[in-house]
Length: 241
Image (cartoon, rainbow, N blue to C red; front, side, top):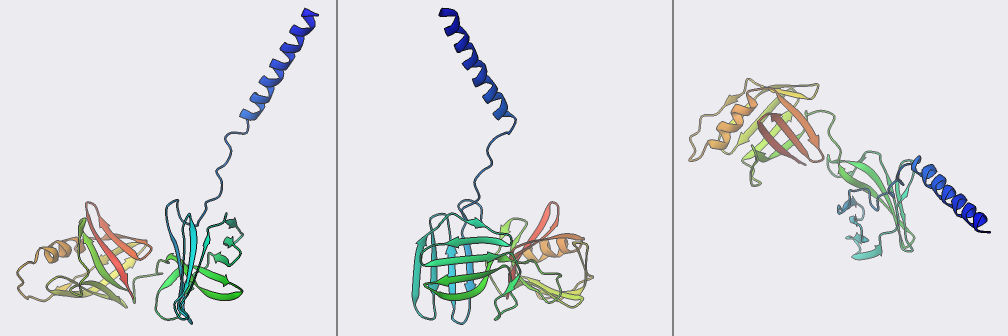
């Protein structure tokens, strides 16, 4: 009887070892899908026109506002359904279908990353969402200056960079500069740039920016921002519409 009991304990121990060893071959369990299309803590935004409406989705709730009819509906954010073309959220009052396809709001030159369809209490709204899509090129784009070498520049009509056809113009606080440019394989080469000769109390931003633009710059788009970089120098631009 004692021998039989010992054999049984040995068999149970071997069986448990086999189960543990077998599970190790599969690795850790994959993480659950994200609650929103954004990283944790982020907020997804969508907008539409006719009527004007907007939508926000965060980790706690979805809030839809019809600005034209003064209607607002909020629902707890459900578990996202990851579809073939994007994300789907379904609640009793709000259903949101996000398709990762570029979308224009129809009233400006702004192009968004996603097309968004929202059903609110049975009524359908269509619009755009996500961050701004990067433009195909620089021609026809206008930018405000957000920073020069990590120094924040307050929004002002005296700080801008504009691209029209194969020419560009810019201003960094005082004088205007203009001339040809080339944008090829992600690199911006400006100039030669002609500059006006007005004297201003502070011309430090202008002198710094002119020096940066004097060398080829790597151009990197991130949503509504354009980074012009030649380490350690950098000009950060924000898209104007």
